[in-house]
Length: 137
Image (cartoon, rainbow, N blue to C red; front, side, top):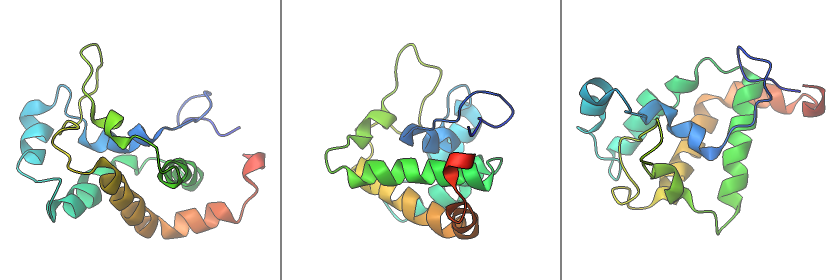
């Protein structure tokens, strides 16, 4: 069983976990201000992913990164998967992505870019985990 870092709870990430690095809840005046200067629908998207999204997961082991990326890969393989739900800001939630679903022109392509860039940056970690038997984690 692969436990969530620093706990004994099973690690079961969702696609939404990738957006933790752009969660501005209670950080509107710091992280929010920095992110709102960027356009997630332009060339800024790569900067957002490389400087905010991927580094947010630096604490994850190579195995955790592998599971997280595969979760996203499986979602991307489902042509009917609704990626816009991860940009919803719930009134009773303690999370708030920097941009809501209406501000992201193509949520699927945003996550495709996350997949591409995280796979590139974590290539050696993902390769290492792929060589292991995940059922032994």
